[in-house]
Length: 243
Ligand code: FPP
Image (tube, rainbow, N blue to C red; front, side):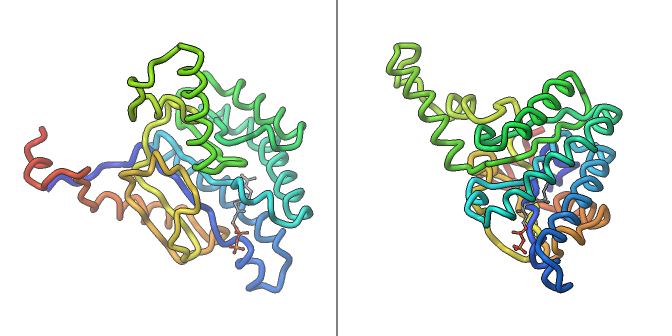
């Protein structure tokens, strides 16, 4: 039975910052700050592990509905993260991308995101895809709108709309489908995350809260993935004969 090597594309729903803080009687902001420390550790570790793309859900389209103070704090953390990590990303040959409706973020944050994306665009190591102001339904709606406009303006024929065309209109279309999706904190939900690209992802749930998630826990997820049998809708026999 064919087993998997390393996943090319790992995506992470980083959940549990608020509960981590609450357990300690601290304001939620402390959990988010610890969460950023975990992001730094895991980005470095994933790059060293040989993962090609790491997608991290930093701020959802729905997160705008949180109290203004928390939203402001998360944006500030994002600014600080970009400022403190850009040198490390360049040193580690990491390409930085953002997926989401970034026109919603404060101007200074948007500028920092654009600058780091441009600066790191030639890097050939791991790609870090940070999902900010991101919702998968928005992503699909944006893709459909672009396609509809091209059809209305005569640039494409509606008969040519297929999966490959829709895929080509997703955010950062060059990114491959997700192989392994990790969600922390014991929630078993997808939460409007990368719906198109997770169609055949292996799902990995852990009870560990994001601020407590370690390099060892990341390795455990990779190891679990290595033991999964992926059939992509085919039979075991077809998969065995594919080589
Ligand atoms: C979920 O915790 C966490 C988020 C809102 C997204 C993850 C954010 C970070 C790790 C910090 C910012 C990241 C960067 C890169 C600057 P929650 O608040 O939903 O936790 P809860 O479910 O326990 O309340």
